[in-house]
Image (cartoon, rainbow, N blue to C red; front, side, top):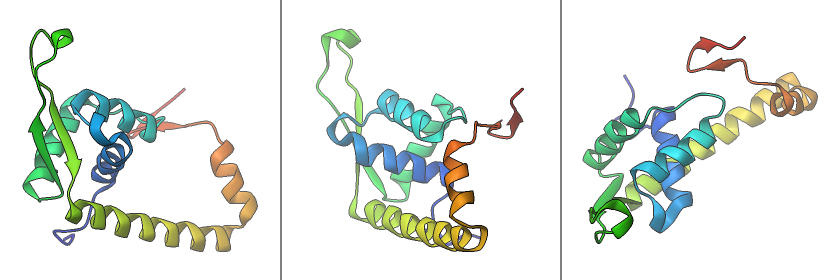
Length: 130
């Protein structure tokens, strides 16, 4: 079983999205940024909201309601921000990913690493692409 403070890949995506969006981190913008980061895999908006709730329960992010906006028919947005615990967890995940990348590149070679960036996508969250 994973440590309570370890992050899953989808949680890492959402925390990274929040980190990059800063003050503009709300559900729809987080969904769009996570989708861009996850390409070619698709990201469900529902999964984003469920995971944001879980990250908030873990104390990794916090949320607040923005002022109502006319373009949303007077409705407020729920804005998210990284908490210190979330930032530390993301830093640890990034450091681990870097170590994995360095080792696999060392074993499989730099040409393999270059090919990984040039390859066309083959799967979307487990589904084969023709």
